[in-house]
Image (cartoon, rainbow, N blue to C red):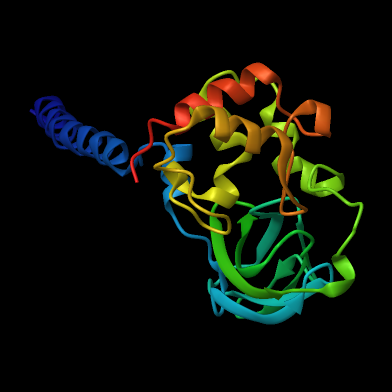
Length: 250
């Protein structure tokens, strides 16, 4: 009788424990989180935020260096690290005063802009990346005024850091859109609609366009882009670009 009672108790314990174990196993599986992909990280904003994210740098004469400070705050509850700072073009250099920020902490990013061959309203962006791959971006504007001392300057937009935007990207480009995107869009705007420089859409004379692109206008703002004038474009590239510009609507 005693043996039968013990056997019955053991059987009841096994039955009771089996569902609990299975439930625990299922619960453990339910708690697992799906992996975080890099695309998800890119979509998240950084806890390092620019305050404000638009800064007016005031007026500066062409050729003078403009210095603008951008303020960055750690809006999160953990220490954050600025691992990289990039700018919209090679003429702008940005350097943070401090890279590690405690929660609520602040730092400044010093932005130095080379204003050579720039005029009127100029807009640049600065972007930081944190240790998680998240980014924040700020914009700064400058009013670049005429500088009489720049008349006759031998400097070219194809030299030095300016060349990283106006010269180097043209290498290997063989179609009109690719050439335009490489060395024209930053001044003449998307689809030739004009920006810092006049619009190119609406022209009907490919020969005239090719001549101006090749030899320039005599201004440091628009030098000759042909290789024979020190520029980056071959005769074939100029011809392809000129024909493509004719297809743009006003």
